[in-house]
Image (tube, rainbow, N blue to C red; front, side, top):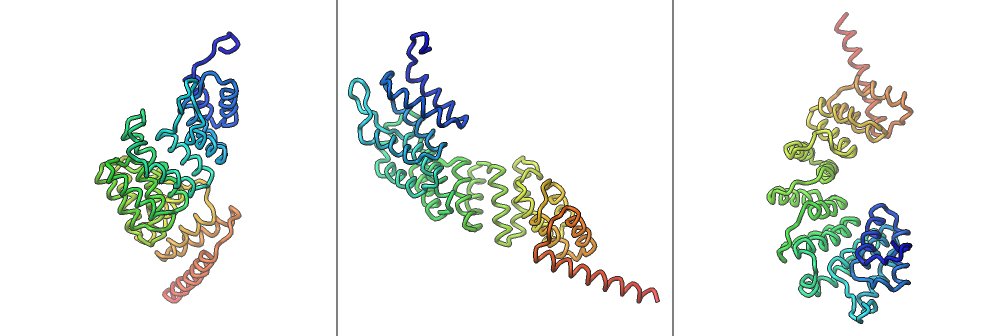
Amino acid sequence: MIKQGIQPDIRVYCSIIGTLVKSHQWEKALEVFDNLIAAGMPAPNVFVYNAAIRACGVGKQWERAVQLFEDMNAGRVKTPCEIQVKPDIDSYSAIINACRQCGKWEKALEYFEMVDKNWKEIINSTQSPKQAASVRIYNSALLACSDVGKWERALELFDEMKKKGTEPNSYTYSSAISACILEGKWEQALSLSEDQYKQRINPTIYTFSALISTCEKGKQWDKCIEIHEDMVAAGFSPISVTDGAKVSLIIAYGKAGDMKNAFRMFDLISAKNEVTYSAIISACETNALWEKVLQLHESMNRSGIELDDASKKAVASAHKNMSINTLNLEKAGT
């Protein structure tokens, strides 16, 4: 268009930058933005600045993201008519996400506090649907908490948004649950999950997987299996959980004496490693399946996988018990 002497309008630039960000070409996206600013035409608006801030997040350029945001916030961005381009709710969401993506969760929450202090003014000035904009900003803050396991702050934010009449969605629940899970707070995670069911908002497969894993770590074996059954009832395939959750289910089903499902989960893990074998050997040991323990040990040897300390003890127990069984059979035969 430019070669033909046709100057693209600002919406074209927004679209180009947005497309480049989605394809992770953040450097190219910022180059387009910088060329636009240098040319001075067409005049930049809040949407193109928001797109550039998102590009900074993808590229881990948090300082540049902060600079772009603060240029708007300080009134340094103006239209040809000298009208200030001020940040909107999506600008705050973009800068929170950019800081979060760069590991600056405290900075991310600082920007959320700025929104919270001026909530009515910022939310009422947005051109987006207010409910959707509210959810986006809270989800951005919750993700920042989720990344570092700030579960108490995550629960505070969750309660605050509901008090403001902002309805959480599946991503809201997922982020709050993840924050609890990261710190091993399985009871709080399950409470959120139960509330999610009451609101008829189905968890994602990753939320189900995370809940299974955290309950296993909390030695809540029955809960692991219950969540797995709930997942199937929600329409997911019983085998669609992550490999980490499959390992947790091996342990849970082993504790419940359901070795058929324990081995089913084990067989579904294609890239088996020390952790995978340790889980199934532990399940076999719990159920006194000594021959299976030795068979699994042989399989590990063939694959070049070393035993961990717990598995070594299980194998030693298997040899001992198999010897006792053999001796008892010999005595019974004489």
